[in-house]
Image (cartoon, rainbow, N blue to C red; front, top):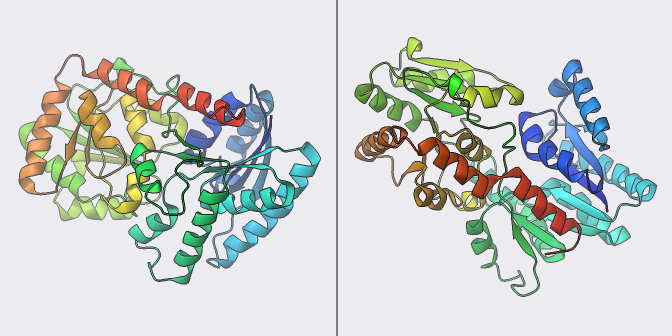
Length: 393
């Protein structure tokens, strides 16, 4: 099957490497895939990484068409990217006989819908969550703004016209089916969580520290809530003196340092670093437990954080909060994490004690790995996409 996969995230980014490239390298064994991505200039000019990526794609017989991502001026730049993307998409459809357009999230979905209208190609809407509502919940858009209303109208078109919808969570599907314009009998919906390559992310006991290390990886702003992280860490240190906090983050170091300083976390108690995707399996294996918190808002019911699967695949239990996707069901149901229902001091202290108790369980590592295999296996995700490409829903 000839598939055009469109991602507005660049595959030179850690997210693109994890949640686009890992799937496509395996899917390209059975399908002829053309990847159209929008790459940020800062990533594009890392020449060695880019050349290495081209070689990997070439070996996998995966065709890559990178376009430059534009951020400014706001909105206008997105329309410019869309116009270029549509022209390139039309060319690729004609040149390679594309039969399926797989759109990752909302901006690429507009291109996929246009190509469906022009050429009658199949349209897979890999929605990744309620994007417009995520923008509102992150404080980027106002719910009464024109851009929000337009995006929600487009969302309706995507949900009505897509040949298949992919949701990250069962909780997200439950919300989708409440929309009056979603045909509950005809709409084809698959649940495929953000998967992890368990050949890369796996336990390495040689990296485990002697003193307790609490780990944080990824974004700390937007719909993430970082402030309770140092609060929980302070409680952890009281119970387990000598514990440290390791944070791996790309662009938010001043914000993170400020949050730690406000809670009087001494600099010698934490490490704040930047790491490439390829380094994260090693880094996560230095954690005894992972921690992250997400705003429990409407849009996050459809969210499946990538880091959750990566932590569990490395045998690392997690401390997080309720109200986000299927996380509570998975962590509590499988006994591989602790879930906060609120951010009171009493709840945080109880959660930290539960986390320490969980980490002392001799079976916790294997239980985490088994849970990752059950819910977040890349092989399972690739199998689901293969069925979708073949029309086997």
